[in-house]
Image 1 (cartoon, rainbow, N blue to C red):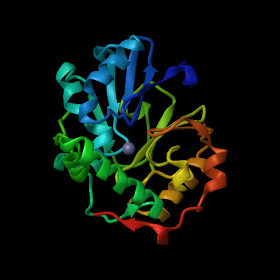
Image 2: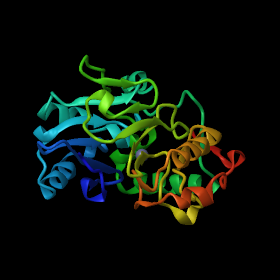
Image 3: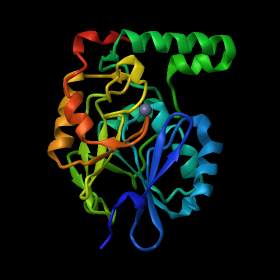
Image 4: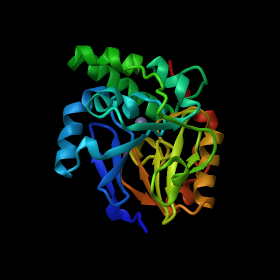
Amino acid sequence: MERTDVMNIIPLKLSVTNCFLVKAGDQDQCVLIDTGYEDDWDLFRRRLKEVNVELFQVSHIILTHHHDDHCGLLHNILQENDSIRVVMSYLCKDLIRKGKNDRTHGGGLLNRRVALLMNLKRLYLSLILKKAIDKERNLTFPPYQLRNCDILITRDTGLREIGIPLDGKIIETPGHTVDSISILFDDGDCLIGDAAANFLWFAGTKYCVVFIHDMRAYYKSWEKVIAAGALRIFPAHGEPFGVDKLKTNLWKNKAENIVSHR
Ligand SMILES: [Zn+2]
């Protein structure tokens, strides 16, 4: 029987995003959770080397949502191993095909401090890195067209149901984006994508990520993760933390503080 203790969750820290490898089965097979920015390719390969994993060992990539910092490397990876099956929400399929972070479902930045930080970052990038500001503005990534071998998640789904030999499930956790999903293992480890985060504390984030599509849905997803038995939360941004942090910070940020994001 496989166990999914912390030892089996291997973080790959990229420029902004934490991706994760999870060892699955007895053949040294791995599942990769998220990729990273398109620019992270060299760093991604270095990180794989550091943990002695080769791309031929990866059987599935689970995308927690369609954003540029989560699926930017999909093409590079599949070019090296096109037998990897990509797993995503059925709502991700059309968004990922557009190659652009979704703005059609509303939402905005968490609060004015976060908005100020983002504007400062943009200003900094425009002064220092002329090319980076365009990317920052557009939030784009190489578009991805679903293949026949890929897997769409249409409801909360056991990992074994989709051929991943691990004890756990994929659960829908919308709020950051409409297509956000998380992976919850039976032992309480939860790879949560951007359905929670642990960074920019001084901006009052309180375990929320900086962009929120729907604040109510976001906290409803926290309630779902808590009720489902999560114990340790592994976010895509920032260090892992205990589920008690979600319990104590639930509903702390307010929908009325969200700053619309052009
Ligand atoms: Zn992200």
